[in-house]
Length: 293
Image 1: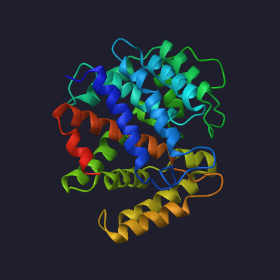
Image 2: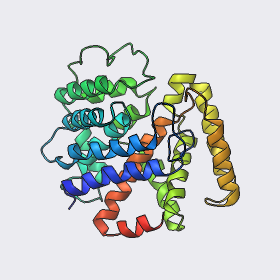
Image 3: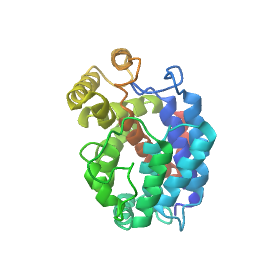
Image 4: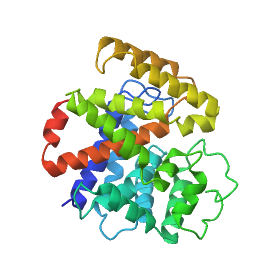
């Protein structure tokens, strides 16, 4: 049975594995942005751990809000709002059960969210102050929190935000695209860092990144997805040709203002890693998984 300690570990480890692997267009060890570097993402993963440790009996919105407040206190900027929004309901569904059946329990958790969760999540989003949100005609986060269940607000945003889409589809991308991609690499004994990159590319190739779409338009986002698909077809994961294609793709996404940053795809990749780390904690294979870096 998964406890709050395992959930807290999984949340923090998933964030740390994600930042340590190359995800084209995103921050990693030797590829900072002008305003944020890998060290801040690592600090953020530690800061949010307290919120995930006390999951039992806590509302999803309460977890989101505490994790955002703690992150803001430590790093002073938004580094992980999308991650927190994704991991909080997953964590709530995981505690007290086994990994098997996680998605079914997640569906119950999502449908049990209340107006109080909506209020807390809206407060968290305003505190995080993420860039690139734009304006929404309905349920805009800049307006007072609507007196509705958060799933209704997420449904309104699902067409232009993949995190919202995950809420209203019981995390379809995470469970039907991301996890199979990662597990396919595991079966082939692919190094962990390459498995993370391949999972990221697989998600991006199937779902245009909505952060890019909001900054540059859906046409540009679809071009980026087509280029991710081209990398996937370049050669076997981990080969020299594959690595060259990954690096070339990464370079093509780095502009001065990071407008081609597939940040939402990176957030969903963390959700995949959270699930994989949870499963490895449950069956005792996490040390082996980490040694495969």
